[in-house]
Amino acid sequence: MVALTIPSNLAAILASFTVHGLIHRYAAGPNSSPARLGAVTKATSTLHSTLTTVLAIYFLRRCSAQWPRTDSVGPADPADPSLGKASGLRPRGYPDDSKNPVLQTRSSMGNAITAIECGYLLQDTISLLREARLRHRLVQPAFKPTLRSVLHHADTTLLFHHTSIAMALLVLHYYILRDRDRGIYIIVQFLLMNSSTPILNLRWWLRTYHPQYKMLCIGSDIAFIAAFYMARVWLVGRILRGYGTSHGYDSAWRVYLEGMRLPCQLGTGALWIANTTWWALLVTSVVKRFPQEFASVRKAMGIPKR
Image (tube, rainbow, N blue to C red; front, side, top):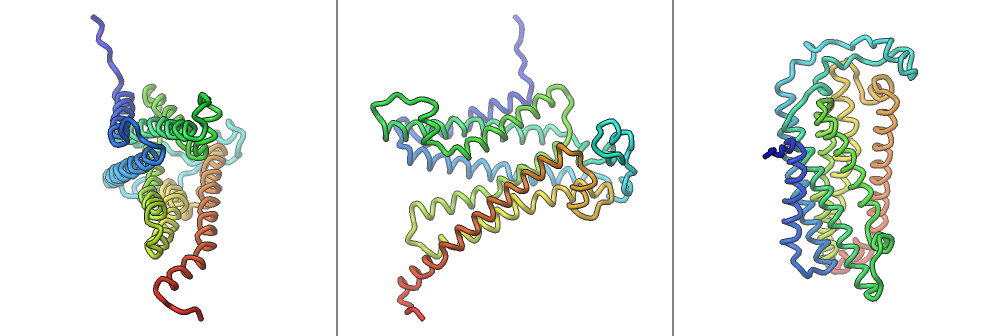
């Protein structure tokens, strides 16, 4: 009999997918409504994002504590001109990352954290489609659901976000299987963006089930604005500065302009612009709502208008 051996990283993805699915189905129940299913999905995402944030912080601190001092890695490395000439991107080449621990660190724990994230995203995508299918049945019970009709009732932005990141993580684990993975430290840093999710879901819970608590709702708005900025806008610059430390760069902007290849520039720039745009839209919507909500608070407290 031939024994079937599953690589550890793929086993972690399957385990995460299965555990998240069992938790979600047990909490939602066999005949759950779309509203209950949506609430369970948000509760699951809160638990998952809290777990991955704690694991990511522990992993990042443990890795950085084992690295050599910055001044022992070396000052700004002279870029290898052959790199730039070979790629045709820049004649001066790029920094030598062969001794940069931010890129060269390899870790089974880091791989496991990304596997947990990948399994969760795949399972959560199924949960979102299941919720959308239930909504379709409520609106059009006589019509058989199709993919198009289900997507019409789904949050397509969230679906695209989940599936795109899940596919990227699957590609990462393909490279891990081929022993060609690099940059796990940076990838786990990006998972810290999950840290804003619990506040997002708390904000949703307050506004959905307890809208009468205006001050708490306003407080959750302010907290989410701050958390979103730190976790999804400021964090990008912090990651760039961390990468550039080994090469003597003094700012994220210098790293972006001088130390990154064009594909990395395009991807990082697109991510930062998208997150900054979402943050600006969030701030705009909250600020527009403030006058009406503060008026409701004054009225409830019996404070006369000036």
